[in-house]
Image (tube, rainbow, N blue to C red; front, top):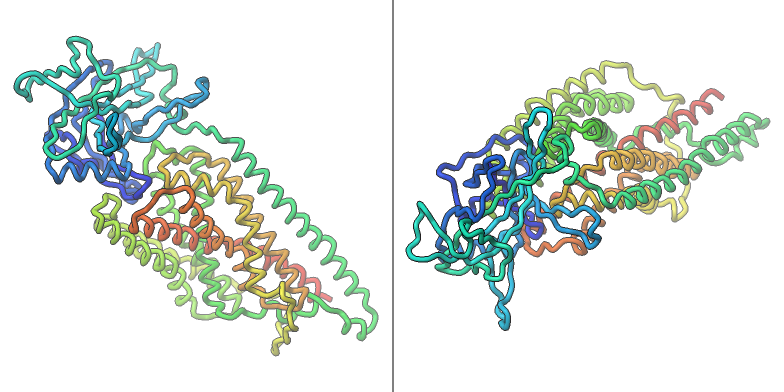
Length: 597
């Protein structure tokens, strides 16, 4: 049996249930069980009146007859205006419309679902009319196993047509007989020369054909055609471009670590007089202040803990995806996995935040644990509830139902929060991380800084290179999310993710070294914000993508786009935590030499 899924549009980004439009319905509509990810994606999978028997081809099979009124005609016209597509599923395969490329030898491009209808004009008329796709020509591809003599479905395609069906005499629901499409005379639909117009009191007859085709594609490889990557050269260009940035930064870090630091330390050890020591300038003079706890250190600890939680979630999710456990065949699996991993990574978030908090000589670890557990999810939940209210106001199936909302709250307060407290308790019980040098009681005065060492300027500059390393791949990610396409190149994505982490760490180390050389020891927050500022460029690029690639015109749809991209950018900002750790290790190592001398 064919199942129907949501109606989707890249113009509105608001999914709707299939039966929100007056299509033909079965005797009883049954909802399929959906996982958490499917519900959050807006999937609403239900049964349909389309029934196929394996190998039983059908021609001009009449589904039902509908007579539109002004309300239903308006509903169809609105969905056609917004270019909504109908999604169906057969044997867990999504329905696709094959589109042949200009290069006839290349495999076709598959578009998910078929359009509800189209707009056009009759010949010689300038008035625009609405036409509905009321005839579907299905092609079911199957692979036959020669050993077991069994067949399994490996493809599900459709060619939609708009046809104004005609019949003789009085209509009979029991034995309908059409003159425009008759299996007895082998008269089938091959074009839409006489399209079915959508208007008040229009009579629409829904029909379909089913053709079964033998295929050489094996069942285990049936998703390969859907996930065919035709732009691999662009992805490789992105990787090479990112590697060039990494090599450049690695050279600078190597120069700092192997040449500058060790040369400075050697010269420092060779100083013979106190006068020479007093003449020394640069990063060596701030060793007594560099480990001074930063301003608002509690918030920094919370941010670092959340970053560890994000890093763990992303890393494990990508490993599962690369191994094939999160295939698109498992609808909603990726989102479900990310949510569950986020919840269970709370123990690492609590551990990291309180370890750093204890290093800053803090004692109220429960307060830090609570802020770590609720701050980021609270901000995201507030934005999400506002967006969900907007979706609910549009009566879209994308609105999260009450039961799912309760499940999310339970995951947060029932599992994530306790795990954060467990991790915090374990982290606080461990011995505090000791500074390699003693911090001066009186803070050293910071000399006047050059204009290019201004915190705002250096932070904004530091975010450019990490963003430049990933922006090409970011284009494909945004396309898959907002243009309803599959994304399954997790191997490339993992490489870009690794390059991003290295780039963030290295640019932060370089800028932190320059900052310490200018005798500015307030490096904690700047090291965090340096690569974190790439989140600002991500949001700016998302804005550019909105105005250049998308055709969203409705206010609610625009609010949804920018709301979700704001959440993504904020999450990207919080995830940049490895740069601070590596930067701290560099400062720790360098000043360990000074402390011993």
